Length: 220
Image 1 (cartoon, rainbow, N blue to C red):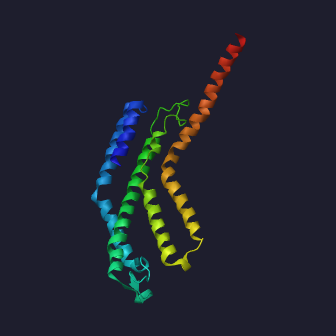
Image 2 (cartoon, rainbow, N blue to C red):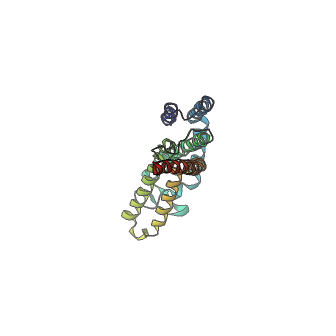
Image 3 (spheres, rainbow, N blue to C red):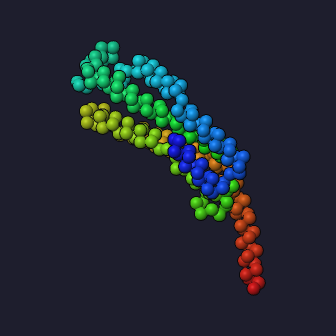
């Protein structure tokens, strides 16, 4: 995350997209977000939520596959592998996923603060975003986390419980794609109003310029 913030700020400096006061503001905001990223309390909060969630729902984390558990409901008895899944595998995955969500929230805050600055955007910039395409290179590990988790779950259902596998799972895949698209593109929505206004201004200004140029050329 720190490397991502640094890369964005380096681009802003080299492209002279912000005046000195706005640049100083973003430097301070980036430093604050890095401190939040490294803070102990958010990680502790994620850990506490994880412990409570595991204590309340651990029976739903495994199924009565012989090597995981025997019985079901209140009579569910976990094997050694089942306890390992409940106390080690699932918590590690969920803890890392929680940290990914926290870092994504920091990226959202960074994008919001940046979108509120007076960015020097140009309608004719070749990136077709006025020079603001650089924030699109954002952290994407969260998408891999979700797809790996979903793929593992579906693989288990298809191989060990074919009778419970059904095409309805495709609905969950569609919902996941929508969520992933929101995670990936959601923070960029903050730039839409300014880019829309820039597009309208560019059409007007360069339309006038094109008309004047074409008129002079026609007269010559």
